[in-house]
Image 1 (cartoon, rainbow, N blue to C red):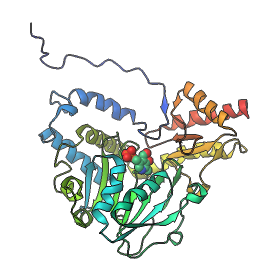
Image 2 (image 1 turned 135 degrees about the vertical axis):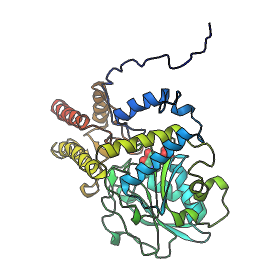
Image 3 (image 1 turned 120 degrees about the vertical axis):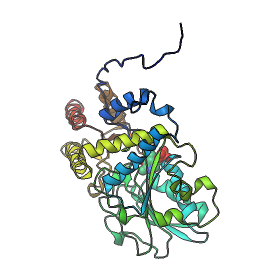
Image 4 (image 1 turned 90 degrees about the vertical axis):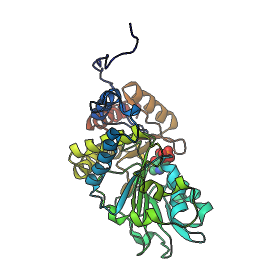
Length: 379
Ligand SMILES: Cc1ncc(COP(=O)(O)O)c(C=O)c1O
């Protein structure tokens, strides 16, 4: 008897509920319906008889996956045709050098707004490519805040671009406005941890990048939205595969792209559209974050937020308890009750609850109940 199965032989067993809310800062939680769809499509994509991870990146089925991912991304943020949408690899970190390699001419300058760990990394990684300067830094205040208006940022009108990080994942701070650099200076943004958390006007930006593993899918692809003029810019001789133009001219697949990751990001885009898009997402996120910030503010100082209130992130909520021992106890007891991965980053300590788009409201309600209970017992 042949040992080769002649078609789908397994029927998928029903899945048990997972019983856990994942508050990880990234890779973060994903919408359950996306995961369930992926489970099907890993087995058999679009009735093709085999799964997404086995399809050629040049085949017709993947053509459709890629085209839909791009089209849905365009629809979500109303992205005009003169912006390219690229799916790259190397994480958000690779953009720390791809941006200056492609946009910063030798002898030119670029502005960096350093409001946290990753923003600082972007600044440091750009140094080998030109004269970069910090146009704003909140480092001396332990990155507790972001600027609230343009007049706080010392822009250079001759800069090749101005770079900022819209949400500081580790510090738990976020811009609730979009900076406007001087005319002619393109705005570049690391939007890794709050892209598509709310309305986005891409025409204010020259280039946006976001590692997918927080609000857009899984680690392995980075979404880059770049104005076509910048995608074509040539400021030095770069290796072919480190040029935006190479990817823009070849639908993100001059070589084998991360097909599964692009597929999954496409499924997240479809989920965002099913939820009604970015306006409802913003409302949903604001409500969820408010539940937790209210618990912090109503705790009489038992929970102390890291971020200055005007700079609070709706995605990553950072706070401390009265002692480090209590921080540890809080994190471990929460985990026992099914709320996992809330340990603050090694550079800040404390607690960090990441409540990305995919975190259900019920997860936040459960956390708030736990916070109140924990305070009663330990306060
Ligand atoms: C805002 C921000 N930028 C950059 C990074 C680095 O991303 P990657 O690990 O994809 O390089 C992170 C990761 O957490 C982040 O939160």
